Length: 409
Image 1 (cartoon, rainbow, N blue to C red):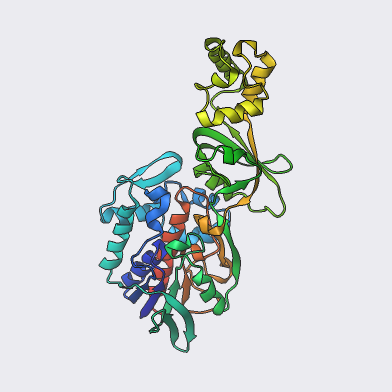
Image 2 (tube, helix red, strand yellow):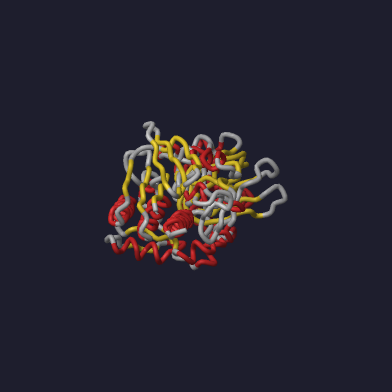
């Protein structure tokens, strides 16, 4: 049996190797000059391989069509990918939130291991893009960008989504799926920086905060998301690990208004923070207020907090009233920004949307509409929060699609 896999990311590599493991003759078509380009930049170049969570927690961390993933996760889970990578010399470590990384802290370690896996299974790798995918009487025709064609019995589409187009995720898989009669849920950005109203973020541009907490509420003051960790201010708004995670929860900008509140001192309640401020003020009594906050705040944050506190910047610390001091504490625990939307899909880590799961058999990843056509990875309308969950979706759907396609009719 001849199988063509379109796309050489983690889903495509897993699919190709699994199909070859079933005895199929497999061609892996990748339009970049090497495999795993996007994988090589994930996790800030460290590659958050997977998560240590159990399957039920995985499903809980997939807000869009999580139940669709049951069969794929049971067929190939987080321990299976770690065992596979270990065979090719990849040692791993588990960090906060169950995130699993290679001990080298280099994504290249993971990419190289998957490449070796693909080669070891005898997969033919062709570095050329797919221009068109056509159904034939006896199988499929994949027209390559160089003008030639590959005729095969089955096809696995693992082209990725529409995010990070510079890595090869150009949305071509959606076009192939539509041409063969599939419904494609409109792609939108997920795990993406957020834009905010006003110039507060721009004033703090480049400032990275650690060990802060955030809360995002809607117009009814209902908490949509909260977290503790790192974030970053940019000219357009906010980014960083917490913000990217939060963005996956904000899916109704056309209907809802979202507000972000940052607590700069989450380890201290209001009373404890006031005691801390009072202690600092006692040592800085003769200074102007604006010059007394170096021990409490990053330099770039000081003018912003001074403005939010409404305390005159040149007022002597010894003259600051208790009410003003409490206002300062409140300002530090309530830096508020109105969220207006997301950055473009090209800047998103993950694409939300894709080929409708209603038209894919979850037990095989085969199309319900076109026999012999399979889908794997981000091209499917399934996406998760940050923490290694999205990559596990790629491995699991890729493995299941390859294994299923590789079996005889």
